[in-house]
Image (cartoon, rainbow, N blue to C red; front, side):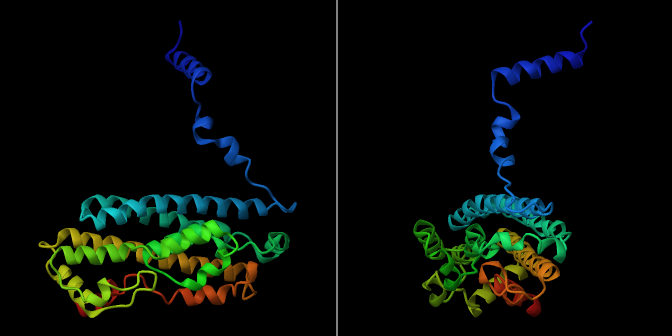
Length: 278
């Protein structure tokens, strides 16, 4: 008698021979053969995989953020909320990845650090695209891409596009709130500055949640993302300090000092300030 298990295994073999396999679908040959150590040190593999996987998570963040921004711009807030929840969960993965990397000790890292040359996490263009989409815009960060003309143009374009907070402020306007003209007509490539009319609008949303439930939900999703972005930055700084102390970073960045300065920036400032007012 042929068992159900044997029948199932036979079907799996037949399917594997005649159609796409799991490995084919995920391009595992390419993915799993893309870890090339430049040294013979065991722990360089950890370093490579942490950064490669982080870039994949960042790709997924951008995959969710981009349509979410468009949905908010088109006054379709409900559809954006699931995507923003997913972004926050992805951020959790990125935050926890620093715990894995922190198992790398200074004496282990120094064994292969020189092999990295001028490569630096500061050069991650996906991280820049995420920052721009969240409203953290700084022209100075683009200088490292000037030699990559096509990428530089892409980043310049992204810097001038509405962030998710710009789209959310427009949603406030669509709901009937009066927002200062200087906010609505501002240069989107510049870092957003807190504005009293925006704070008043969000405060009204929080004081009338039943009336403005979608906007209230949107604001809380933004707070989740802002908070986790800050946690990611802290864990990044903390891990780098644990491994290299206050040395200059690879690629010539100021390392921990630069990362500590970035901790002072709060995304979506009025959503933070209104908490003191309420």
